[in-house]
Length: 417
Image (tube, rainbow, N blue to C red; front, side):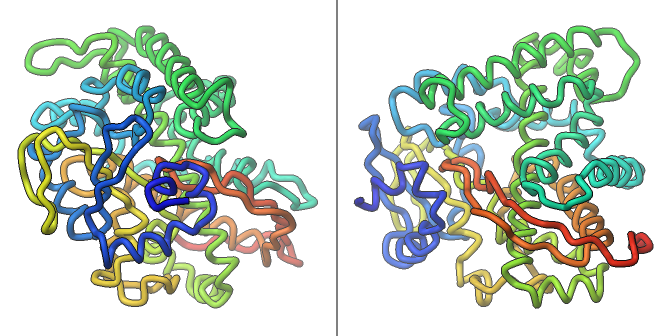
């Protein structure tokens, strides 16, 4: 395969071979013109400094003109703008309107709300662990990593438990539709179908809350006014979908990837078992290492320069986050998994105005889930094939078969948080 073929192939990113390719390109072709199946092409950006610059300049690099999904073929391009609600979904709205919409649904993700809700989050995570089978043989992704963020975000959004499984299935279709395991029809049909189901669900649930005195984000969206105007049904529904998907995907990918990293680096697991308080710092390294987001797209709004490369207005620009998070100009020994790494300037949650709204919540979830894992189990053994999602959009594990080995004397005393 040529370099461009690799960058355009979702299956390539399930092999982990992209890290070596990114190392080469970061050194020798850091802003690379990449031919794509739709004939339009795009600039691939690999250096941490360049990616951070682009994220911090939303007026020059728009999320709204073409969306943020790595759309590189005609079939996906035909459905992506409508499916994601580009221009209506907070992820795909440029400032200043982006900030106005974001503010409407930000309350549960602000520091005081997160601190107040931590005990509730810990209880939800404990309930999920309590339901694991006594024999300890599980797929850590589907039975643990998926369940934790789904429970937490659905609890925040006040969505009934009987709906969670369907929501998760639609989320896999919407975000992971390039993976054959999740496909129902073509990749484009799968993505479109997942977004459509989530949109209709979000629209129904939010409509039921019009005029209600609740404080959850869906209720806030349906009752909000921005610049003295109510949000349209489409704006409400698309932003509800974004909250669900962001809650499901990045946390599950970071947590499961973090567990795998700790299993592959037992010395780092030993450090955290000896001093669980180190998890607050370790979470940053887990996010850097696991790369829950592979790429995001922007559109140049004017002629500009990235690095030393001239870019024209209207050009597509694709930001490769795993490359930024292994950039040796920023990270000492970037291929060393170090739970004590500080500072840790990873871009796992982005940067600039679009910095992940739920990033702080995700870090709390990962920390509490890791605490529970170490509190309850003396060991974890991989007992089957580990597989990754075939996607150039999100990065994560599909399957991690493990055996959980409980403490010989039963559950330990809870780790102080």
